[in-house]
Image 1 (cartoon, one colour):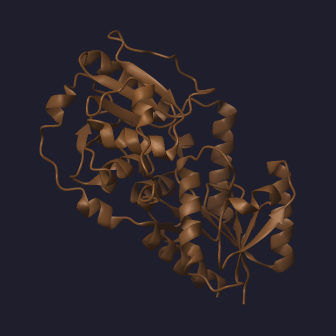
Image 2 (cartoon, one colour):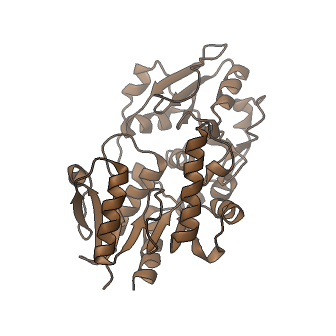
Length: 344
């Protein structure tokens, strides 16, 4: 029986990004499917108690630096001749690797990171294309970009989508509205990292064009490269990082959710908004039309003269078919079948 080792470096306290969310939810659902003893999760010793698992064995590693972490993991893989699984955008560290590559933004110049950062991301993507046994991505669009930019065969890439069920058991904390002076159903909402590919400038300009509307921006804002702009009408509110409970309240009470991204490999936040019964106004670019079909109000992310209240009057289909299409359980089952096809 071939051992399967999952990289758990992304399991840590603090804020989650989309890749970490994907990793955690797939891991939890996979634990329900796998036989006891065959799968192992390597994670930092101090983080062992951050995830509860029944069938996947947790192995603690004492390591403080990512470079040393990968060396220790590689030695462990070689010693056990194990398959290596990474759910969180990690590089393939040896040939028996099945890794997740959510996107290849670095090839399209849509982010405001440094040249060194882009070079590192490009090198990692090339290494995955050459070294990994298999690559998983989160949309047909992302798969298409990889086939365009990387030396990889179509049959080496599988598409396994995100889910939304992590929102189901979260109780709303409405105090976030009072804390930020917000009135229910009288604000437009955005959450995400405030970087170029999220197209935060679109929200700034549309806020200026919709003077009577309030716009709420949530997300970790430390160290991001943008100027705090409250609008010529002083109608933009920043909440900073919010908990899942506060996020639930912001979703439930907004007029609509805004997602004007220039490029997305999937885009989980609009899916979370649909779960809460909120209309979504999203870009007509990249993976978004593939994921949300005719259940969204689409905008051109380079056009700013929208009246959002009028846009919301346009008919869209029920969100039920989108919510039925995606689930963490379905995705974990696809992962399990893929891993077993290699490990056996």
